[in-house]
Image 1 (cartoon, rainbow, N blue to C red):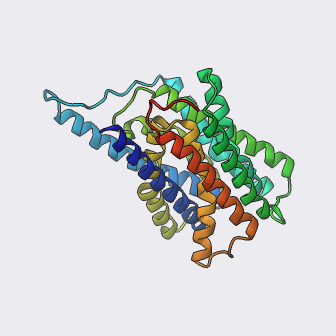
Image 2: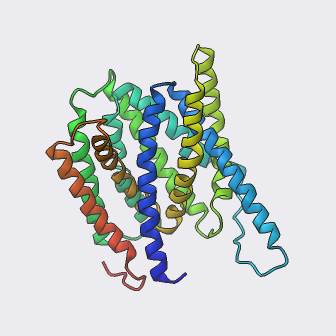
Image 3: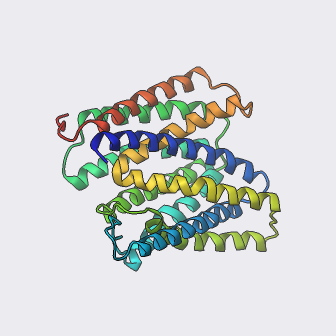
Length: 316
């Protein structure tokens, strides 16, 4: 694939990822009306692992059938056990638990506000690891997008704070740092990989799902129940939505970089807000949120345009 084709593919995959992530918010919200947080967290992750396992098996079959023939199939870098454990802990278990506790303590708006800082944190970390200053346009675009995300969340803070804001904020910061670390570390470990993504992320999510399953077991032991309708919703959520979302997210991590991948997440809350308003699940966003959306889109446009420039144009 030529350079132009790669750029077009990156834009398409970015748009698809944002759309998929927005749909997960809506479906998870519907699931939580019928089941506990631990059950939903473990269920969606468990079904996603089943989907990834199926794709890994299919990928292995295709690789085996090409043995002895000319093939461009990439050899996956082998994880060490501690790398799998670190990725699973930071990107699956810790993030899920920490963000859930943060929402329980401080309400949903404050953790969302904290998570909106992730692209800035990742951008700074990328620059430190590379020992190079990011391009000016990338810095400005990221700052504008984060500022827009903050503007979007601020109206939601009124009357939406939980019973322990300080502790909830600490858990939200921990969740944000956990996910930032995961993106940076996954990209670093897999920086030379170009093959099928399912075999690379399946072990991570499989190990990360184990503590979540234990958490759900505790919830069931306390008397929680789950209906077949919820199980069906979680199966749909895990296999049809989360699997392609995870595959796209991790591919973009390697192609666009961690800060670019994190930046795409800022478009999800506004898209959820607009979709909810169109479906009459929520009111029309107020002027401040509309301004925040516009600022976020402007910032993302600057970063994406910079990312799509030919490699030779490196002067910021």
